[in-house]
Length: 297
Image 1: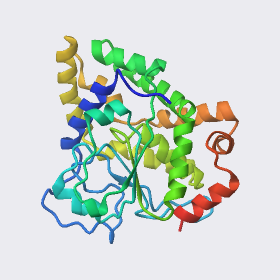
Image 2: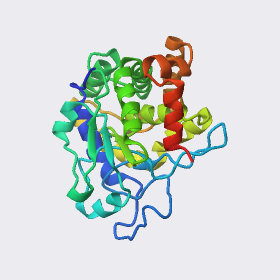
Image 3: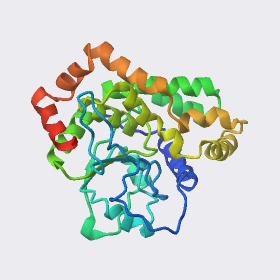
């Protein structure tokens, strides 16, 4: 198990700028969070808050609504939105951040009656080449959009293979949680969480094209242009080097090649995604059947 070190400041800053600029609207509103399923939930203080329900599998079944949620971190979760989140009935929160990230941005929860179980599964790799490269690029300003994009591709090739124990534990937690709603999150809710959501959907036999659709919804859930402009100003000042907003965008968005790279790395190492589930993650045929029984209509 590895953790983030050089990137802690970066991801903390990222979360801080994403939250105010999410595409959520109407600060004063009444939301029935359960009766009307919505893919991207209108929760302003938790970025990229989404539901992976309603996706059709290859066998014609569908993922249950309001059972598995994904998001960015909860360090800026506002008390006024607690009733909306409590109404979702979340029984477990799986936090994929490192200990450093959690220390810098502690999760918030204001309603003791609905407080969920917290499962800590840090995913990352400060010792990995991609992590060191990204940290160095952002600290010095010595990168182009293409170089930053390449670093994220390297990350997606590395994370599923270097964090099999954590992803195995994630599926164990889902099975232990049964039919109760769960929220899975990291800092931005797009990379570590994006891989986790993709693996869950794949284990449930959701087609690859649908999994990609869910993955790319991150690009609709945040205001990329505005956030990139603000981060470019900060990084330019800190690095004493002019950084253009377009160069920052690979940090904020997801690209189809990211997830394609993750799946390709898995298949190159294990021969198939099914083998990866069985050998690396301990998802035998029986356990996958149990997962389908819990999370599919």
